[in-house]
Length: 218
Ligand code: SAH
View 1 (cartoon, rainbow, N blue to C red):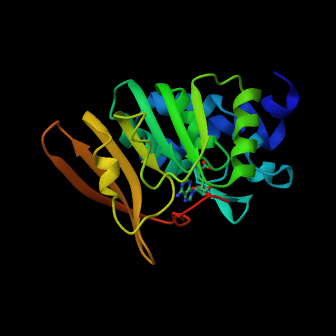
View 2: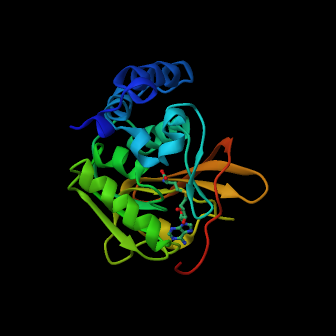
């Protein structure tokens, strides 16, 4: 790997290791998630001028009015989705810069990701190429209804906030599947849905702040 990907100073492996210790202190327990986050150079996903802040516990701008989620949020959502096991097929709605996607690529066999803003998706694809990530299929589409033709999925993650859990997404969960997404407008909460093959169990978790889910393509 070259220096840009590998990182130096505030973007070095040592900085990533410090981020992992902080995440453990914040309650993240899944060491598989932590190991993957320790191996992915988060700084290449943000603008160069912000690279030195990439490992802080902050959401940062990625252009087009969108943000990369904070390391804690990425770790938390990944941990909730994985629930201790290896995932087969995962759907992400809201690729953004592709950082969460890259984390998922290490936790699942196949990752499908959907983004409505074309230039953001193009950048995310560049990052997947640079990191030699081969198990991600990225599509320029409105993901509000999921990807019915590709489901069912073991896990679905939405990284933009909706006013409710779209029922179409529940139809795309495989038995034993889990969905995690922010729900709400002024006040948002992480929402976890677990499907046992018969019933859906919904749990409201901590307060979060995400950009809104928007309709159509851009
Ligand atoms: N997981 C991303 C977070 C990006 S912010 C990351 O790590 O960078 C949320 C993203 O959801 C934005 O890029 C936004 O354009 C996208 N989005 C919003 N509504 C969408 C929709 N209906 N379909 C697909 N993507 C959507």
